[in-house]
Amino acid sequence: MPTFRSDLRTLRPYVAGKPIEEITREFGIDGIIKLASNEYPVSPVPAAIEAIAAAAVEVNRYPDNSYHDLTSAIAEMYETTSEHVWVGAGSSDILNCTARATGGTDTSVVYATP
Image (cartoon, rainbow, N blue to C red; front, side, top):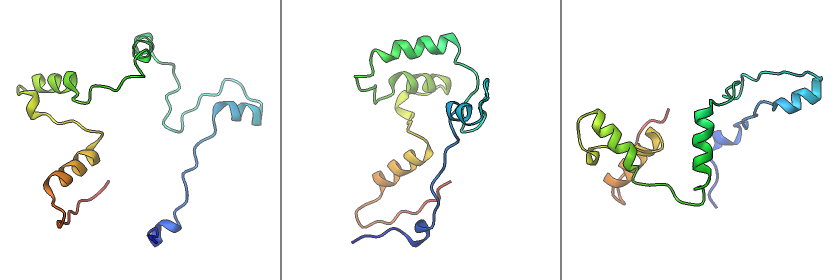
């Protein structure tokens, strides 16, 4: 049976910051501005809310997995064609895809992770 690496056995789980509602209940404080947990304390601008609302009616559809609009805009910015632009879910995704595309079944690939 496969087991986890020994160094992972002692890894402590991430503990998220408490939500504003919990702090309000716990300490009886109103008007809390949360600056932790990578959250922005100000509401989105109206244009962002409108864009979210417009996109919400299509959440039952898969997005364009060719990223046509994005790759076209990047290509135009760098004066090339969209065939020369590759986007992914971060550098780790692109490195993973590159390793899978270039490595064979008997190939080892090593790369650093951030």
